[in-house]
Structure formats: C-alpha cells, structure tokens
Amino acid sequence: MKPKTLKGKRILLKPIAERDISFLCKMAASNKVYKYEEDTKPSLERCLMKYVGNIEKMRTREGEFFSYIILNELKAPVGEVHLCLDNTKTRSWEVGFALSPVYWGIGYATESVKTILEFAFDNLGAHRVYGCCNALNIKSSKCMERAGMVKEAQHRESRLLRGEWCDELVYSILEQD
Image (cartoon, one colour):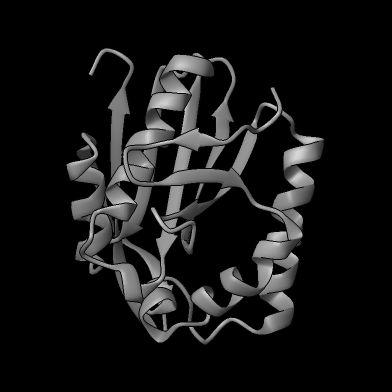
C-alpha cells in the first residue's frame, strides 16, 4: 500500500517529500524537541540522512513504513508522525511523532496520533500499536494517553541521555480498544 494523504478534523498528514526536509531538520534541531531523545543537537547531515532515509523506506518497505508531515488548517507544516511495522505475525506497529514547539498545546500532535492510529487499524489490519518516550517527556506521554493509548510498561534506566540514565515509557492501544 502506497502512502496516501490522511485527514483529521484540523490536520492533514501528507507523505513526507524532499520539499519537507528543511522544515523537519529545523524542527528536529530545536532544543525542546531533541531534549529528551538526543545527547546533542542533531547535525544537518544526520537530519538529512534520517528524512531522506524515511522517504526511501516508504518506497522500499511499501506498506510497512509510513512517514508523514503534519499540516495544520493553513497548510503550514507543524510536525511529523510515522508508523512502522514491528512484527508481521502479531500485527504490531510502532508510532512516533514530533511537533515544532511553536505548535505545542494546540492538539495537533494528539489529532495526528489519533488519525494515524485509525489508519493503522482500519487500513493496515493492525492488532496493536505502541509508542515509546523518555519518562521525563510528559508532553509525549500525555499525548499518547489523549490519543487513547494506555501505559503498559516503564523500562527502568533503559536510555542513556547526556550521561544520565532515564526510564522509558511504553504506551499501546489494541484494535478492540
């Protein structure tokens, strides 16, 4: 299945394209965005490799990897959300997302996650979708909860960030939820 545009109430999720990479790299380099995930500000080269790689993965892993730019009501880019098949046998998928701090607190991340979850269950036959975040990243954990996901695990000291051990939270939602 080729990635297609997905619609929420206020957002559009469009498969990322080369024209989106500048915004995505600027967002990823924001201190507030990489704070809980990266030891240092991601370099432009690393960001380019990541998002060019995501575009390529959508081609080579068609139907198993989806990466979207989030557009608001004005068609302005506000973030990204992706979905990746984790296990074919168990029909388990992983969701991830990031939002430009300028747009935090407006509900775009929650709506984007809800939209991609609906896509996973209605179009991809997902049984389970899960997402992970640094336990200190309260905004990410609250977003997953608002999207209907439930906390299923706290992996103790499973992330090393700037020399400090951090816990990781795992959230999930099942097709019957």
